[in-house]
Amino acid sequence: MLTSRPSIRCTETDVEGMRKSGRIVAEVLWEMIDHLRPGMTTLKLDELAGKYLKKFGAKSAPKIMGLPSHTCISVNEIIAHGIPNRRILRCGDKVNIDVSAEHNGYFGDVAYTVIIGESTHETNPLLTTAKSATLKAIKASVAGTPINKISKIIEQEARKNGYTIIRNLCSHGLGKCLHAYPQNISNYENPEETLVLQEGMFLAWEPYISSGAIRAIGAENDWNLTTHDQSEVAQFEHTILVTNGKPEILTVLP
Image (cartoon, rainbow, N blue to C red):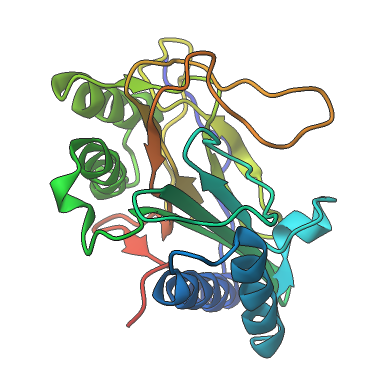
């Protein structure tokens, strides 16, 4: 049986707060992408993000959570939670930039994967599939829709293109904290998931699409996540507002 909690109490103040935080993280993300060049370090790119977050009066969510960096920048074999360092970026490097921040009590979360030296991800089947999976999940995120139905859409998009899902990295709700109800949303069909979407929910859809792996792994006391076989992984993420009609993406620039 499908289940749901009592109605989400989402005020116009909440919506405006989330819109603002969403615009901020999107602005910071695109500034980082615009400045991304071969020869620079991920640490330099993260320092740029810190300057823009300060400019917008926002606080880095990774910093709030105890990470040493303003953002997460994952390069090549690092698939998630990459901690910026003095690693020099080169043409052909696959770079995932994940920006999450708090502004006036509301959190925004956005991520994008690029390949340095390529003007578009459309020539890379893995990146194309990852972006398509996220956008299809967003399109299906209408109030009254079972979450598992959307998770199935994500998995089907990956499988039809010959890819797999990293199953222990989840999408999530957010709002006045970075990981809010529902905290762990599977990006694959999960028969145990019985929740349905409600109007006023804020979600961050972020499926990780892989060339073969199904789990992320990490060493003890190390934020950096990899796969056991160095599989390629790509991820795109947006924060959205669930409505009774077309979902509103909060992390795109006007």
